[in-house]
Length: 240
Image (cartoon, helix red, strand yellow):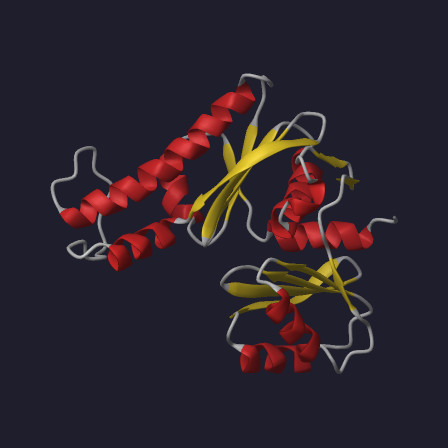
């Protein structure tokens, strides 16, 4: 079984055989030669499960990359309920497949109240109840996207590497501290809201910028990457 997590910037993949990840890798969304080269070395999968949030053009490129294999691509979308998780979105099908599948993986891991935080191109902060209900969540620009936006849209703010300061006194530190405080504040606020409903709450943290956030978050958390791939595996191994 081949699992594909296609985000806004990268495609991550894993080949599962007998419940074990035997191969895995990642490539940028424009690095099709590298992706096809990686796939050419794999044994033909029996199934291909995909979470794709990069649009229909990307879906077509994926189909072309996997065309030599006989099995069709199965694009996972959010539903009202799956694998023990109930979707509380007002329109369940509008929830991004990456967030939905990550929630399924988080529930399998925690089986309790949980805040699922992914620090990628966008930062998502999603809440699961102790009963496995998706209560809702936040989407905000990721830390790199915030910095890029400031550098692109302001004439005098230069994107330099800064440090977290209580009271920044140079522009680089001011930008870095602002980005990080915004992210930390959003996560802590949602954690507090969830904690007001459930005594015990855990936080699962993943994504490319997770370590930048983790250092300063000071919450009971677990670093757990590849939640989308883990969720796809759970879906693929669960009987409908």
